[in-house]
Image (cartoon, rainbow, N blue to C red; front, side):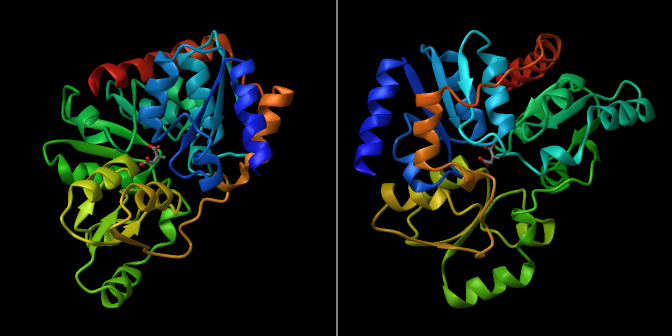
Length: 302
Ligand code: CIZ
């Protein structure tokens, strides 16, 4: 493993590359990354960083987002089959149909969506800026796709808005049931419960704090509490435990493991750099449409 790490470092330098890793990546991948974070943070890094190659350790829509924001760079996705079932729950044709049913209503798409869906939308958002992005739009009605759970959470934060939702969900976060929260609270009395808004509404309503992965990490850092129940993908424990060794973090549900995020291993990162695989290409016209939605998000959610 040490040799592999050393080889990755050597290749990174040789190819003027940087490694981005999502918070849900395996610890071994997060440990070799230059930047670790959520998709909003990583998309900003991808847009601003000066390098020739980006190795995006995450899932396909994230690597495509990096390519759209940095078309002149080589963007590599180490595991070509690392997809996102939530992103696959809606097509651009579905979005056109909803728009026809609600003419003139702006469409906000969650970043967990395909390039085609982003191109068909007015603005993109992530779980860390969804409330900000949607509240900044004029008018009462907003179409929000594809995550119905996140949409429900945002709608509750913004009672003046009327959200038209799509019934997609993250299959990993949707595994958690309200009784799992009760069991965890019984097991760790007094622990703070931090939950991702991709969980179902009946789970989210039992949280002490609801937020994206980065917001969960920040909340734990600032909190005086010592014990936390974490209701999001297991990968965030890598950051939480390393940066806050005086606190205890327990996963809310053993099923909070995204199989697609776990496809990327240290070996995959090495092979990405060594074999230039798998290079992401995005159709130029589609990329222009999706870039408009992404750029608008970056402007609205500075
Ligand atoms: O926005 C992201 O990166 C996702 C998918 C989750 C989160 O909250 O960080």
